[in-house]
Length: 338
Image (tube, rainbow, N blue to C red):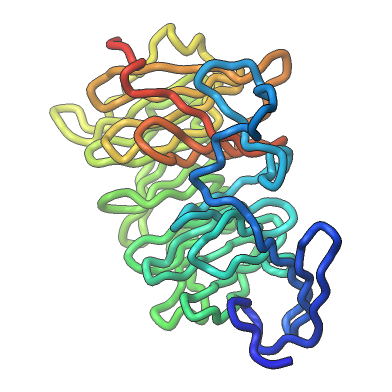
């Protein structure tokens, strides 16, 4: 039936339209499903007209159940144009009207741990394999040395963490080479000047094939490097490593008694020197670089477990959990001084 325009495939063999309006396409690269009338990303935070809010929670709106995946868990998120990609145990789903092809990927890697913008209109999806979709729609796969636990793009190259260490794609992008022999990395983030990782509860700075530990935080669970500091979610709350000054590596207990020693499962830089954080107790909040802060809580008694945070704009953040995907709003004018 000819070339698969808009699909990551070379040729289309068959097409069928389901009663609900979904288009199923059989191609030389597998079975695809297209959502023809998906809403734009700007409609995500609103409830269907005439319906009651599904959660009675001020400043927090769950993603509507249909056609958005309110009950679909995820760990990786990439937003662009008027849509987004959500990665999780089943692979990668394209939502809304993203700049890349509007499809649901069933084949690319299961157990997705990272979705990364390659800076040239393409996307990396890292799971059991590293799969690259370039801006022309060409799909390539890169074999990994083991199950990926985290991934990042830094220095225009792909970096992948596994049980044995941190690997780096060679300049050709066709294979991986061991860059740092740091075992059991559970988080990998690109900072302004270097890569940062968490291994066995410690924060490490990765540079030139070496790993420098920062040993003054509590057991680290998540991290977000910014200029001059690293925000760290720990088993005992939110902390910040200061990289300059008279005592480089000094650690601040950012929230003090305000976080009640709650484990911070996810943190994300807000793009202005501050960070968003998500606690084990269902709290989601923000601390600005100037110290102003605020937080809200997801519904009790069993709030979903945070997997990742991804800022959406000045006032809101995407929260990925094991039970669903949320868009939470915390207006800047509601943040208070410490």
